[in-house]
Image (cartoon, rainbow, N blue to C red; front, side):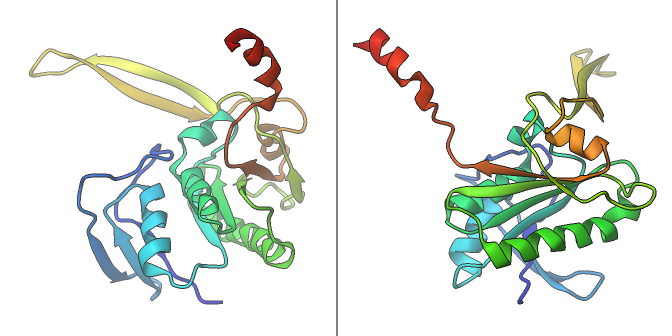
Length: 226
């Protein structure tokens, strides 16, 4: 197929589904070190794919692949992930989408192997398609000794994919208190979840959907708001 690369011009980690509304978006056409042509936009990930679908890639693409991100987007971390935000935005436009993320530790030496696993996911999406309003969140561990154990279809763990805290310091000139975000991947989760799958050496494939309406609350809320 034809590959068209459109990506944020700068690092946009943790941008989630945030969008650009009032600032101008600048475009830069460039050639990557491997010779591939690419387009950089001064926009968040979600707005980048929005502009790509509306203005650059015509007709609609058959598939959007977001990533491979350096660092997991597991569990509740997926909600703040720009990588996942791209796949969600693409699915909102009716385009099948895959969010791909790789364990941060020793990521550089594992990109090739991770790309092969994402290719396997893409081939399956091409062959079988995806239901409307859904996308796949794929997380890949570093290559285990003996190779990956395969794909595992997982649920989203109801916890973050790592430990987060804020280091507190004092600004040397102003004396104001400064907080620095400190995040480290790791943690355990129940069987069947995305976190457990990557910990066990599997490629985690989590089907996600657009919309968070909870119909199970309808009757109780109707009684409250009648």
